[in-house]
Image (cartoon, rainbow over all chains, first blue to last red):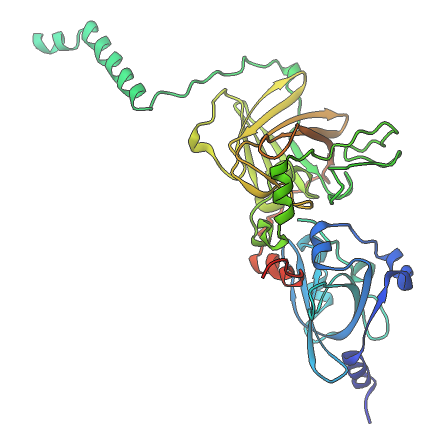
Length: 144
Length: 272
């Protein structure tokens, strides 16, 4: 008998989907993307990707902060997502709101390099869909 | 006693001083040719001091089209806070063949910012952070929250020397018509020294001219860049800052090398 949390973590750990921006136009409205050459070089701002898992590390730093998320693929292989967020000023909330071990769902722009698991301009939510952090946890993507 | 007085006679003292000055000049130790600005009157020295908000509250965020734009639709809010009219003239730099060649081979991971190398003019001013101006009689200090940078603008007439090359160059300035005029040279080559969004480099011949003035409670500046190594002609943009929140003090940036380079792994490699 699995608990709700276990169910959540198993499903969350294995689900991942990529959708075109038109399919999630609504998300784009609430998470406006800042055009940025460097971001465009590393991330595809026309796509969205979703990952679910547990927070393993949070770096609130300049020029950009990072959230590390342990997830899994359909074959049960572990995946480590690196989620690039804004600098210290806009991400101070993350230290308290994203403690290690927190189960979250993250939606953001996927990284471009083949086989990589990166994301930026992401929103965070708890298992029940409650947004985490200000404006769904989307830190400002501070240009540098 | 008589002989000692004789050795220090005015004629001998003059001779010693003259020889010393001549020797110093020959050895390059002559005092810099200081041409101090004639004492500016209070009316010509604008009060630019304070902490200024240069975040996206003050102007559009920098990008591949801001502040250097090829076209701007009428009504678009420009970096100086005013709407563009239908006669907007592109300020996107006209690159020479050398610059175009650099742009073509440019590889994003080369960008020095991924190793925390600080931003420089004309990008530093526009980065969306706060900055502080301190006005002293002989210099103006421009302190940037971004990358913890401090620029000193000398007002005492000193000239740069070949020893003054540096990442932020060497700045001199003066007040004129209630504005601060700054001229900066002696930059070192920087592969993204003009604009990292478009991969445009800058050379040691880059010259940045800035004019700062007050417009009501706002601070405005026009930043002009010349670089004959890469640009066919000078180009400029005008921007604004808003007064920072009362009591706001600049925060340390403390760029973290690990955090700065992490995203490079997500860029598809251009070269093997």
